[in-house]
View 1 (cartoon, one colour):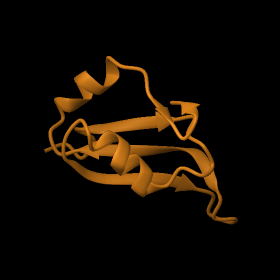
View 2: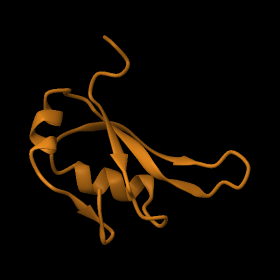
View 3: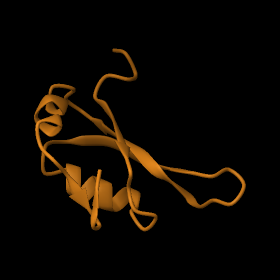
View 4: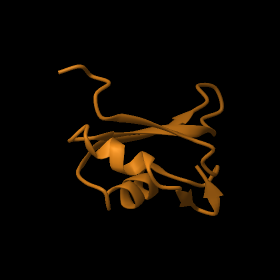
Length: 75
């Protein structure tokens, strides 16, 4: 299987949004195999985007049909 199958880019997230919060929010759509909030290599501060990888890639079609607000930010 292609490693990018089921991977969804999540842009514009709040600086306070964590991997746990992404997992909690997007978990309502289906099983998640991984969540990552990208961080600056030097400072360790969040970069404002991340990725969610769904176990079933077809879930992405459902997720993309809706608008999402997490921690007060539309992503």
